[in-house]
Length: 236
View (tube, rainbow, N blue to C red):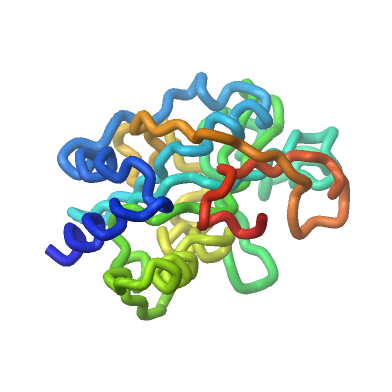
């Protein structure tokens, strides 16, 4: 009941585009994006991932959030990519097959979630930087170890609270309980997977492209993709 009330209030705000689709998805989650979706240039995949929905199945509970910010990493020709040094046991997922999750631990305190791209044998990937929470908000907050009140009437405060859940790579991984042990190498295209990405029909009105964030190598390249004017991107 509380989840339904939260969605009803969010539906009246600009930051929650087409949440009706997410409600329908409670009854039947769409099929995962197919492998050929990922078997392309990471720049193309990045653009097309914006607006799609990340879904985690936790027993009978669904966590769902819209993808609003990603970064493309181009493989061995990209100095900022983990695959720039060649194939290793740590980064092997990035070399294919496409559509598998690549999870790594960074700064000694959080995980980052990526998906492999390009045909099998070619390295490439997309890093997920921010999501817009849709369903399973209380579970996401519990995963983050924080307390929020998503039912507050004040729109700005509600958005600030929800941003604490999935704005930033570490936050979204924690909210969705994504870890290397549990999820590295997981096939995101499998209907049997508890972590998938689906298309609920939403399309962003406008996409912006900027330089990537938090890196020192090849930092000038425009490889960060965001849904323009979305309140849940990590940085404008």
